[in-house]
Length: 416
Image 1 (cartoon, rainbow, N blue to C red):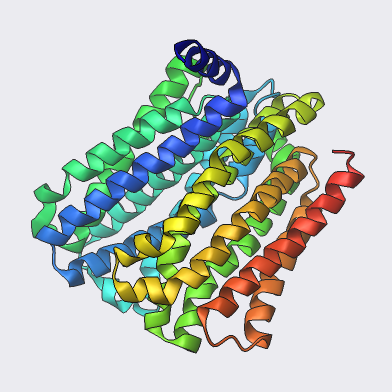
Image 2 (image 1 turned 30 degrees about the vertical axis):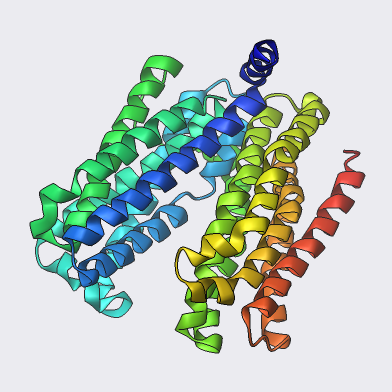
């Protein structure tokens, strides 16, 4: 037994794809666990209104961060491993992302009366405005630096950094209760600044990184088309996630939106397995395209090993898990959850397909597939006149099924 465990651990440690996939999964698990405790603590010391405003502000921050990436979250993974001028690529990416973040943050502050009047407290003092922009810059840096660690096949630092961030975030809210919603946001932001600075220090010490705010025309010329294509594909691919809750609220009511949110939250925890593994597959394939077949085998193996048992457990006990939120969540959302769990098998195929297209630089195909998925899902939900969450889940499953068929066709064309 001990010999088998030792052999398994040795194999895991020596296989970069296995190792980095698990580090990324653990990182997400740590953030989810600490995040749950974080909101439990805040619920005891902050009012519901303050928490509501804070979550709105956090959602805005996530939106700005995601739209500030400019596609570098994929182009750095693709081109950094084989680059002879790594520092130029990193600094160019960091600088352009900072510029985009500042522009979007200032645009949000200026448009507050129109975008979110309830957050007008941000404009009560110029200090709040400056701090918001500063916090957003570090949030974007904290996000893109994960990409650099993935590109270097050193996802262990993603785990360490996000563990540090989670612990700091949890320890700060009690010091800022007098600031209300801004106190909750500041707690997260201060932890983010520390985590981002820690990450840059690791890059300097471990990877010979030399920080500098500069933009290389050569890097922009080489990565521009690839980054732009990925940026467009990412925006299109993310549309359903942003639009679905609104559509469900408008069509079925806010109560059904709640019954949608909980099953999707549980399913997303399962989806982390193929998505994290595909991210590591992307990094490994960028290092050595000639070894894609062996990486493919490892990708399939780790998903069979982890995803299948997890999906079966969630399928078997999903009703009981949803009941923890209330019996109505179980009766209203379990049917949807089952469809979302079945879809996880298709997401294994689709996540792999996204990675392969990125490795082979077939970005136009990636944009087309994301557009196909988003369009098909939204059309199905509207044309089927779905009056319950089962219809939404069926549309979700069928859309992923069709995309999987397209990816399988592409695999055959690429002789995978």
